[in-house]
Amino acid sequence: MEFISKCTADTISNAAQALIDGHLVAFPTETVYGLGADATNEKAVSRIYSVKGRPVGHPLIVHISSINKLDQWATEIPDYAIKLAREFWPGPMTLILPRTDLAKSFITGGQNNVGLRVPDQPIALALLKRFEGLGGKGIAAPSANRFGAVSPTTAQAVGQELGDYLDSNDLVLDGGQCSIGIESTIIDCTSDIPKILRPGTITKKMIESLTMIETKYIVKIEGIKAPGILESHYSPRAKLVLDTFPLAGEGFIALREHETPKGAIRLACPATSYEFANILYKSLRKGDELGLGKIVVYPPELDGIGYAILDRLTKGSSENKN
Ligand code: TXA
Ligand code: MG
Image 1 (tube, rainbow, N blue to C red):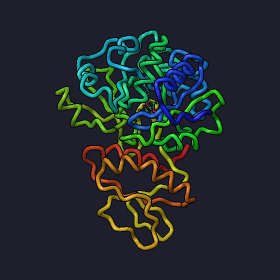
Image 2 (image 1 turned 45 degrees about the vertical axis):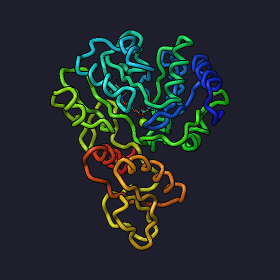
Image 3 (image 1 turned 30 degrees about the vertical axis):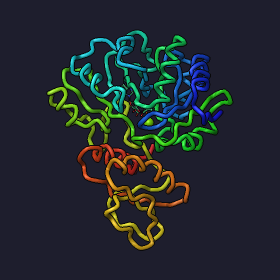
Image 4 (image 1 turned 90 degrees about the horizontal axis):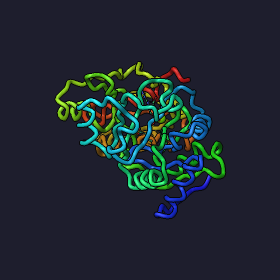
């Protein structure tokens, strides 16, 4: 694995070529780092699964450079999905749509739909454009962590997660800290109403006020029952506990307004829920680096990004690890 710390036109061009040649390229997005492969290359995509230790049959999001590429991958696109794409792409939103023949079952997990996203990050967009310039159609990219672990929000965290599993020809593009820090909102657009499969920065309220359609959560905060989304995810090695009083020696993450109980190890004190989302995964990693046995988190209010934060924390704290 090679780290590319200077992302210039030349190095991005080399990375696009590496993808065409069937290698893996981890790259920054505005949400979290993705582990990319040519979405039409079955062999390259199968390496994503082995490097992540991810069970097969778990579908992957295909990243494209613009809404103009949407109909290469998706068909029967409802009007509300077009509205969402026009408004929020590039951005932290994945749309699940009926697939075209380009989206093979090794991408969709055998389903008749495909997840698509245009990321809002200059390196990711430059990589996508260059890759498409070389004939590529889309980059499959799950979060660049081992299966079930916390998503990486820095290139160093990608190295820690996957360094032992990547080959010498695979690349990691370093774009610094991701600006959002938690994964995209996933919206199922395969029926006449939008359904949120994974909450994120693009909220139910934002979707409803744009589409004027009442939107459903398929997500239950406790016990996710959405296709392809498992309960135990986003887990640090430390035991993650919500809303209890942290004891001496335990990690503690909460908004700045909460004081640190005596002896607790403050891992982060964000001022807003957006800052909370931004430092959450980094702080959980810090707790693991410090070898903490337990990390206590006080989630912020449920408005805006708060719902997505609670969703990740609930899954991360699930006892039902698998
Ligand atoms: O922010 C993000 O979405 C990041 C960055 C790298 O773009 N990607 C990401 O991918 O979080 P991943 O694979 O770690 O999480 C995507 C989730 C998985 O739970 C997957 O099962 C679900 O999306 N998914 C993907 N395609 C799907 C489909 N066709 N139908 C239902 N769920 C799907
Ligand atoms: Mg993931």
